[in-house]
Image (tube, rainbow, N blue to C red):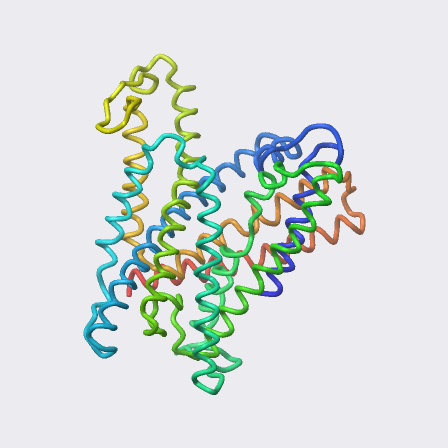
Length: 400
């Protein structure tokens, strides 16, 4: 985790210097990640960036569907264990129903105008994230103190074969790669900063705080969770039932996760919806199916709802597909590992390194260029290793 914290900071440092082009204090602003890629690297790599970005957004929505179902099931089981006892046969199944329920909720939210741009969404997401992270950290610490000993070992969870151990390590790296980087939103955050001083200078201070805070929570939850349960530690401390009491606190933490993911799904999905709407309008400018809006009266709402058939079909298919894939591959840690490993090198390392070289005019084969390319090459190897291991985990779970 410390290594990933360092890599994340380096990536953020490189990218923050690409906000303005070609000068750090003047000239053109790059309002988001794709703008920066287009300005520095041209259209071809912008298409690559866009493809990976939208693939990541789509995959994250699948992961959110899986996670929400797991949390809702955990709330039900926590109440069952509290009422019936810790040895009660409180079913470990039922995710499919909750995935369908989450999909139905997202289908409704997908048609609320400007839902993703409501200011309170970001505030709620930040509060919920801080709340359930703090609860997870506190429960792990309390359980470790209650045990009076530190469980686990340096070698970690034993596996049946060395190969399985290697794949498990690769999957863990993929999970960390999914959790750490915030490259895709860094320039949008930087665009909200005032200058002087230069935005990149202010952003560096924010990067240090963000990486340190994230590392504190990740290390705290991970280390105390493993110290509390050892090799029996669940993949998700709040849903794997290492803790039974206080049940209301576990319920509250999982409810916070659900609220966070309800809004988070829309924040990611609406970017894809906007892209699809724009492309459809450009490709079929004379199509009534794409461009015509129908006024529909909604009971209890003063203004009529503007219904568009293309949006209805695309958004319904989108939500249905994310829900369907979540039902098909309901593997929390493995899916996160695939997503994290897939985008880690190209979006978090390669493109920021290449943009920084262009921004600073770094000549190939100089000392600085070689150092950056070596950094990129090492991260490529790590990312590939994590991707192969995570895919192996998904396939093994599916076939097993």
